[in-house]
Image: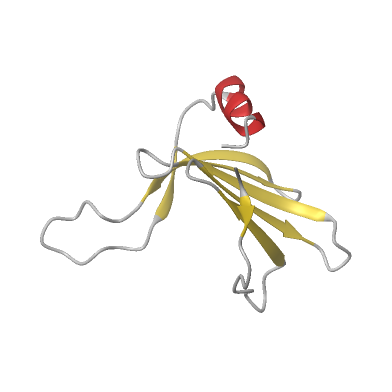
Length: 101
């Protein structure tokens, strides 16, 4: 079940955001001052091969793999980054999301 995180750090120059989380998903929703959604990022398959579906009103959709920065032997952990990834299995993800995992 997804739960909303409280006390989310808001970045001064970015739109306000809300953050919901479960064992499998993270959902970040950006909204205007009026409360209208202007973007979201649905991260899924946390801890196993995490990916992110991002939508922004000004840009559209993108699907990425998350490089968590952990796989650099002998070096410090790097900052996680998004890397272009192939097809998005919308049916599988929709079913899991509807179960509220």
